[in-house]
Amino acid sequence: MGQPNRTPHPAVDVSPTRRAFYIGFINGAMGLIGLALAVPAAIYLLFPPKLRKGQEWVETADLSKIPAGTPTEIFFERTNVDGWKITNVKATAWVVKGPYNEVVAFTPQCTHLGCAYHWDDPSHTFMCPCHNSVFSIDGKVLGGPAPRPLDRYMTKIQGGRLDIGPPEPHA
Ligand code: FES
Image (cartoon, rainbow, N blue to C red; front, side):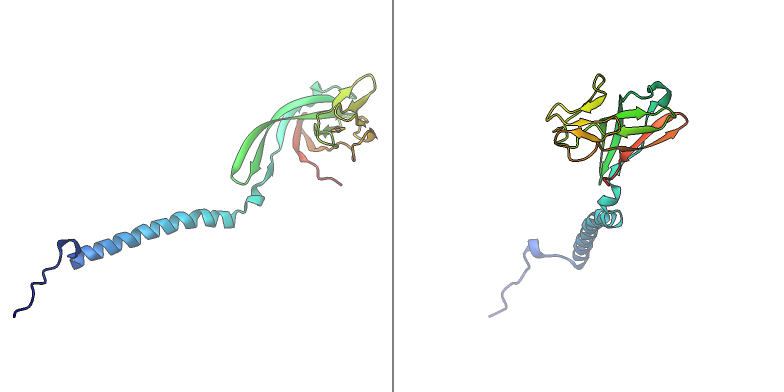
């Protein structure tokens, strides 16, 4: 009896050259996948999102156009940066200019539950319509449930122009 004919099946007949090509191709593909995962991970580790969070300074109003002694609501657009997410949002501030061009810019939310308050000229106070908190022109609480004075933005004056920064941290 002779040996059975053991001719390999054509589907599994892989020559050494073709095998080397497949191995090289698979290694190359795995390397690319590894690189695609490693680059974003490295960016995340080198630049943590919390370091890229915040608000930029914004050029807002010409200070000469804001009347002294009367709170004026100004409107501007600012850029918020939160990790990789950058959004432009419309914002407002209540600006109070003193006789020597000194400026305070209040954030527009009531410190009770965040409603928009307004300046009431006859009573010379800021009034919140939601639960009747009342604030003086310098932001102090005069009545109602507000737990603290009005919050303020950081400000600087450059060349007669008011620049508004992020809200000041609470004391
Ligand atoms: S939100 Fe202003 S008083 Fe409540």
